[in-house]
Amino acid sequence: KNQVEQSPQSLIILEGKNCTLQCNYTVSPFSNLRWYKQDTGRGPVSLTIMTFSENTKSNGRYTATLDADTKQSSLHITASQLSDSASYICVVSRTGTASKLTFGTGTRLQVTL
Amino acid sequence: DAGITQSPRHKVTETGTPVTLRCHQTENHRYMYWYRQDPGHGLRLIHYSYGVKDTDKGEVSDGYSVSRSKTEDFLLTLESATSSQTSVYFCAISEGTGGFADTQYFGPGTRLTVL
Image (cartoon, rainbow over all chains, first blue to last red; front, side, top):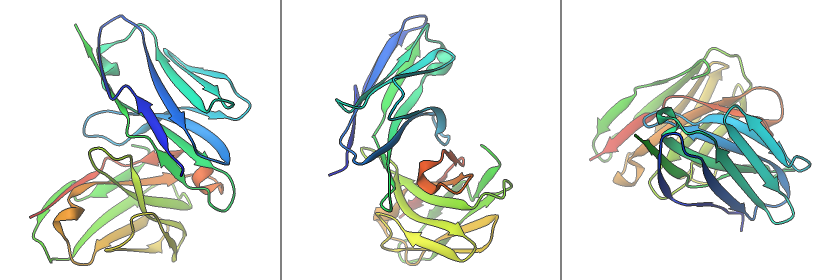
């Protein structure tokens, strides 16, 4: 069964601290993996996309990693800001005619003073 | 929100009534999608469209129908609303011809409550 599991479900950190969010997937055959940020009351916005051959990709203070062998990805946030408070969703797509998206349930991050 | 609007943004309706949600894009993208988002679930695909009058079902299509008579508009209809369809509905679009392989851009969502 194609699944995407994210951990932790929720996380509270102090402003300025770093954090890492995890995504494990069983989706096959793999096409790509995206991380989305969803602010409360808004639609998700794409942060990064990673294909099979990519190990690391950065977008400002966000750095995503991918280990296609172990089917794991992480999203590292450096020097967190209050505006990073949001849900972060891992999304995996499959190749071929069955290419749909499998969404994780997200990690809810709260950055506090 | 990448040139996507959804209307209405909030709606309360009663069980058994038909409801239509509208998604409008200004990007002229080929692919459009409807998802629902519920606590404890990831976003789930209801229906999608790969061109005018070309639509297909997603994983949770029962009780929903869609229509796309022009590139910019994708309508989602709940034929007879039930309480289980209380949810937040998101429309998305993607550029290019790769369909689900391409990055999707989401609208602001419609919060629907069925009493």
